[in-house]
Image (cartoon, rainbow, N blue to C red):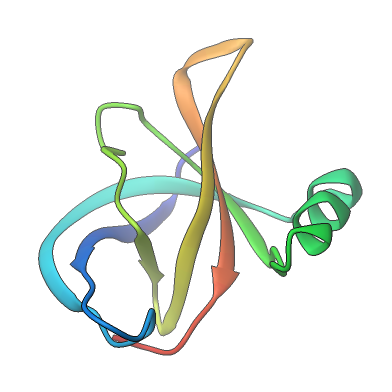
Length: 99
């Protein structure tokens, strides 16, 4: 059940990846999951460290790049629909500097 309040943020980047400008922010409910072993290792081979996975509605996720949950800020590394849950998109997230 989606009980976590998060913000999905669109960014505009010029130069450094962590030095972007926020262009929009959308708040929605999400379910926070731990990263499973295969997700963690697959991302690690690509140079990322997945620290959390969030499930949100596909109506809320429109290719945003950043997710804010409480005081934690994450880069959305990958978003993908869940085959057996048509109303769910899983977002694999890597911790980043606050906005």
